[in-house]
Length: 111
Image (tube, rainbow, N blue to C red; front, top):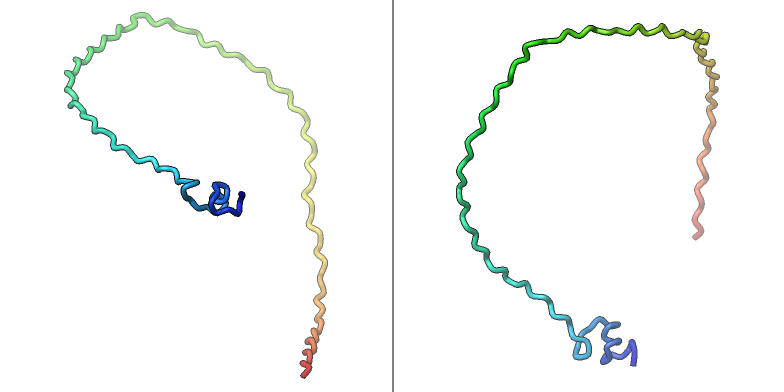
């Protein structure tokens, strides 16, 4: 027996039907989740804010000499000569020719 047999498993798969030979799969039922009991949160006591330490002032300030370095002047190379901008080419005049368009002759119907 094979694909054409309505009573065999292979035949039912081909036809897309179900029966004793090919029962449907049972659908999974959604389970009801138990409700979780939450405890109310206890309010914690706030910790006291830490006091900021005072910053000690610096009594002596050392003077620092400024050191500046003299950079050597860079050698400037000769710049290439600048070319004159290109001139636009003269556009050619286009002659407009009027061409007479003849209408196509209509085809005659045969009767």
